[in-house]
Amino acid sequence: MVTQRKARKPSRRALQAKEKIRTLQTASDRLEFYKANRDAFQEIEAHEIRDYDRKLLLELANLRDDGWQRFSKRFPSDFKDRSMFELRNDLRLIWERTVSDKRSNSILDAWLRWSTQAREPSLVLLPWVPDIRTGRLLPDWQNLPARVVMAVLEHFQRFRKCGNPECAAPFFIAKRTSQRFCELGECTRYAQNQYALKWWKEKGKTRIVGTERSERVTRKTR
Image (cartoon, rainbow, N blue to C red; front, side, top):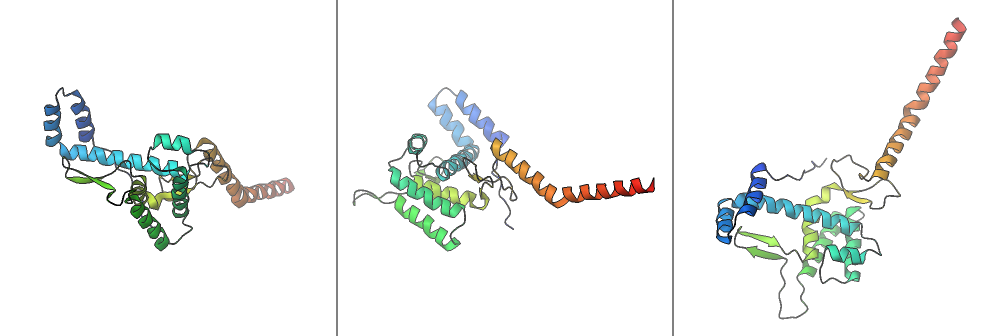
């Protein structure tokens, strides 16, 4: 069984640094404070990237055929709706594990190659941008295929599809390995009903039959 990875929340020190830098008046003061607390800001940045990636995955996997305009406003890019729906369909294949691991890797590789293709032959597009302040390569926020690749690798082990056949957004990221239903209100009620029905089939009838038998025995012995 794969051990589930829990997203780490920013430490108290990192949150305090984030609040402190907002109070500094000059750019030079903010830069000096950033340099002195670089690891704290890297922690905040990593958390924000994970949060963004998680939202992107959920929105894309649950993208409705008539939801293009809403999605494109929330996650702007130069993608056309047809290309985005192709990305969505591939993501769903990976999410539901209807293709092999080898095929999933091929899909991710194709997305990454797709993200580097430029309209002009003389241009070279990269999915990462250098950040000299942190000494890291950061993802390009406008490069949706590359961001989806990163997000899939981060969250794949917790991909689930809600057990409620009427769920409006069935693709979700589980908080625990045994989770079968998302946490929408109607799905929580559906799950409770399913658990109650299962209990009734397995134990409820047996208990009632046993109670009826004991009552008949008691009446005969009176």
